[in-house]
Amino acid sequence: MARTADVVTYICKNYPNPDELSKARITKMVYLCDWRSAYKRGKQISPIKWIYNHYGPYVDEVVDSARLDPRTEVVYTENAYGNPKELVRLINSGTPQPRLDDEEKEIVDNIIRVTSPLYWSDFIDMVYSTYPVRRSEKLSSMDLVKLAKDLRTEKKAALDG
Image (cartoon, rainbow, N blue to C red; front, top):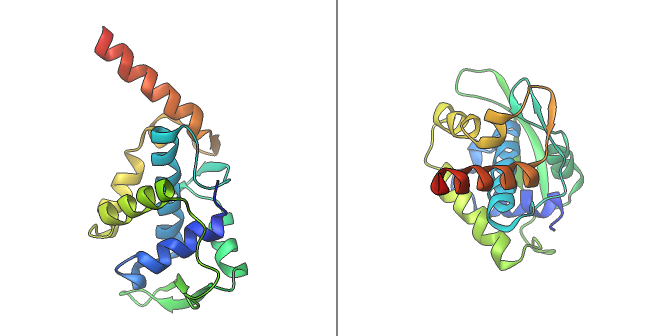
């Protein structure tokens, strides 16, 4: 299992549109990586215990790790409408390199490839359409590994039925 900071750094290093990596987007990207990993491999990439809050999957751990890691920083800026926003960005792409195994890199690369062309509303629609969000109560924890197992069981039952 990778450290959250390594996942964040890897995303910052490989995301084609760094000015889009707001707190909310990068947090939800890490969630999507964890969900895909839980479904494909039976385990998350990060150690995060996800919460479904008022704005979908969110935990402070993602941005906190960016603040504490010497490879990344959180900067305050404005969005296109002049409202304040916080961006997570890479400041030191040197050492240490993000420690992700090849399977984890493949999952994160897939999430980057699928989400980077999406406008914010389409990106959020994608996040909200995931099985854990659809099946979880607001303000509850989301056990992604258990939910992935539940989804596989549902799909198998549908095929067998």
